[in-house]
Image 1: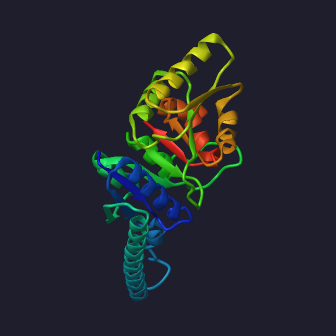
Image 2 (image 1 turned 45 degrees about the vertical axis):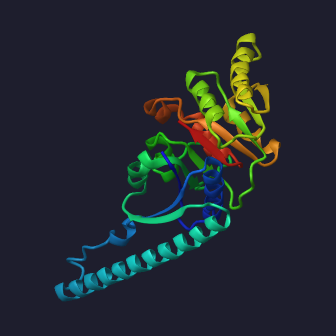
Image 3 (image 1 turned 90 degrees about the vertical axis):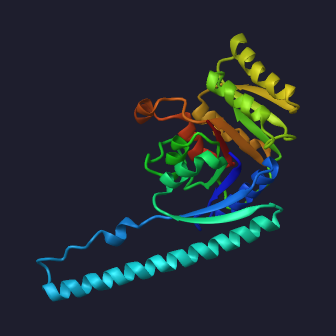
Length: 285
């Protein structure tokens, strides 16, 4: 658990991923590793059987041309990956990271991340797209698959540009998992010195205030300046709007309190917040 892994893919959030990873590595005092995974494009081999449509000789020639094209595509992808990693490494070094390495791998992205997990302190990924309503993510998407697969924290860059956070919003629900998340945040150097807002969606009852006070007290004991707020309504609708009102903020939340089977039926707050949040999200396990 001694590296920050920045997972870059050349899409529009890649620069923000590098910047967030550099910021995190500097805060945590650990090395940064830039990761680019080359996955085989399933569309490149989708049509390979032309028997019955053209003659045997023409078929063999066409398949050879397709094979040559696939090899050329692979070489170009590798060269683009090398250039991407070199540019990212230069950017991270300019941002003050003392130790930066790059790694290009072939294979399934989620399998690669899972393999590297024992050496990871944090994974930083880019968001795939933003939603306008609280419908569910597709379960096969990289982002959700990674968050479900690993037990390390995952920081999700939700915008193309990095803004250093001025505070963080801790989404809290009073559960044992949320309490453990608050304890982890209190111990970690990553968010030290940033003001905190602990937000809980629940009915206005003494029990809810007591639960909120526990989380607030934990962070205050660790030296954080903390405010707390109890919000009415459903967290899926209320929480995504709150961090946007806090300036340059980071939303911190737990991952998937529901079982996977239950999630398939009714979804989860984690999924909704990932879709709806316009500020970066740090997902804790």
